[in-house]
Amino acid sequence: MVTSMYDPMEPGNPFERMFSGVDTGRVLKWTPEQGWASLPGTELGGANGVLMSPDGQSVIAAAWTQNKVVRISTSAPYAKAEIELPFLPDNLRWTESGTILVTGQDITMDDVLMCNGGEGTNCPTGYTVLEIDPSTMTAEVAVDASSSPISLATTALPVGDEIWVGSITGDRIARVTQG
Image (tube, rainbow, N blue to C red; front, side, top):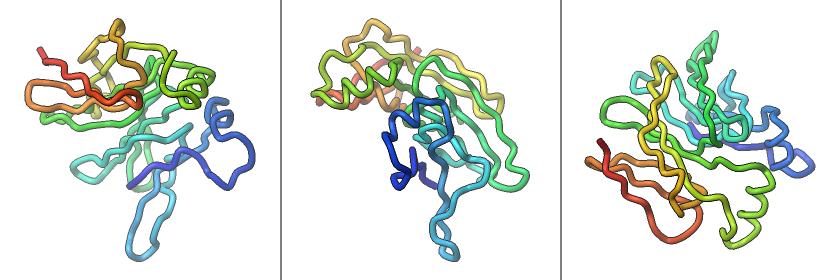
């Protein structure tokens, strides 16, 4: 399984399409018989970040520009559950306890264009890491680093008793002790 944020063959600015709130991307599944094919029910705005449930019965994906994470069954009728987030969710990571860590960017399309078009300077700073229970699609704050100088967080990875947070800016990671 992989995500595709948008169709590159569609004309126009992909960021404008993604930030309009429409479904621009999807989850793709590869099999030897079919190659790559869209997984039904996984149309999302800026699909980004994907996990497969341990039992293979569902896929969990970040809808980046729709500020949500969704869980979709991998077989008909493709039932969907979602959770709204206060930021643009990026990559997803399993924890040992079976929850999901997610971080992202609390920014607008203008911020994205400014930060991506530049050197990562003058970008909004701080980040939050949420821990999502995939069975209930509820979340708790794992890390509140809203005053951190780190900007544009993209991933939160559990490593021992720490959470490592990566960003598209800079050349370092943040290491935050849990609990």
